Length: 304
Image 1 (cartoon, rainbow, N blue to C red):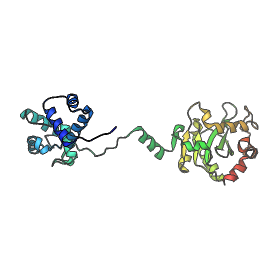
Image 2: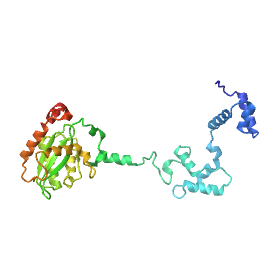
Image 3: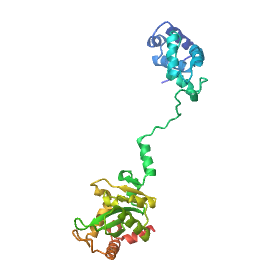
Image 4: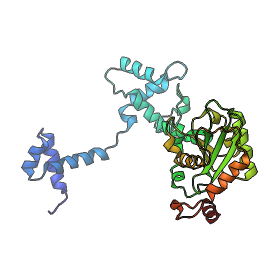
């Protein structure tokens, strides 16, 4: 279709017919054009028309300058009093007055208002709270653990769990597994006190120079103080949800391998640390199908 712009003659004819009270559709049928053309023409005129507030609201502006005082007479009160005193004079809304002040159309400035508002105020939302927690807190729920850790292509992301022996026995075994290489370390623990466990794990990691980038643990009370170790090493500690052992799948599978040497129901009291070191050597030297029948030691050397 061919489109032509309205000529000056057509624009004059449209203005004359509209001033006579005819509708846009009636004018369009008389002139043989589309009614939407007339609608766009009138909208363009309205956009080009600039209202000078000093001309339309001159009475109000003079009243506002002479009566506004942030100590006892606010903008709202000025508008209310003006409407009461000058019933037939044009009066803006108090929000419109605020807009004029914000846009520097009046001599009054923002710092002269009764209630000073901060420009471009940042509203705190849930995502900002979440970001603050991630940046500043050491112990976080596993839901906040970064997704790249699940890819298992970086060493140092550890899962920690305890392997218990007989019921009501204080002794246990702390198992540490690297999510990437599946390398395991086992620690003999004499007690279940959370501060004892925290110090035991920290000293073991420092002594064996274990690379730590993040720690994932379950909700056992023996790990309540492990956040101290994470803080010393400047890493994040992620706690799994209750009854969600699948969130530490690597840890659970490794514990099943350890049970081949230490079956369930075995007392941990007489299991020495040297025996645990031998178990770690056997597991870490075991060919795995997931690594194309390479061992954890070989995978670790590849990453090194």
